[in-house]
Length: 123
Image (cartoon, rainbow, N blue to C red; front, side, top):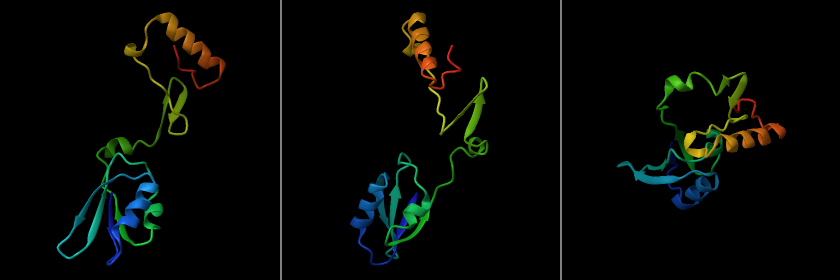
């Protein structure tokens, strides 16, 4: 994300507000024309653009295009073994490196099922 400041606006208060929203200020660039651009790191918390635009002193906000447009086109949910998995209903996927024994994973799956913790796909 690139955040461009209005002319004459102090940089530090805007950086503080961006940080308060959970955004990582990766750098500050100044154009030859005097424009100040704040570069927000990709690892930042996801926020609505309108929240950033609402900060006093911001002239514009631009988002980079997605590095995975074909993945993005599929939407945010997928059905696996009859269970919908999405941001609202996440799924824990554990591999062999996290399992010490069959007894361990069976015990954990039973506990999750007893709590109705969305473990319907555990096996």
